[in-house]
Length: 131
Image 1 (tube, one colour):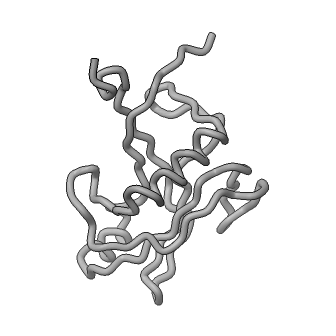
Image 2: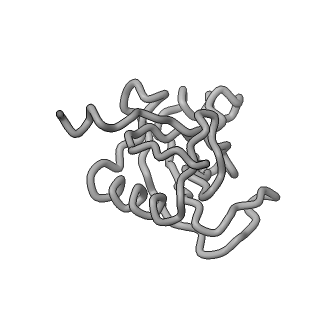
């Protein structure tokens, strides 16, 4: 059986935390540890660290709705070293935070207007039922 046949696809959406109009930067949490998403999945701090590292090693590509590359660049990526607050929003220790520089006026206007208001990670992984 092919490796991907054993894995299930998933996606997770997290709100944008802050925007810089002047620099056209947006920041947000990509993955938050130990919280259930819309599909009922929970991701541990260790798995988030691995996903963040794998993304930087093998991809770094920013996309639009999992469909096509975006006219944007990943400029920051880090794991929250402690619980913190960014623009009044709580960020848990171990959360994966990224910063994206938007290179397109059209995309920037979509961010400003709220059409693009979150980050979504798509991937594959093993689902393990938790009782």
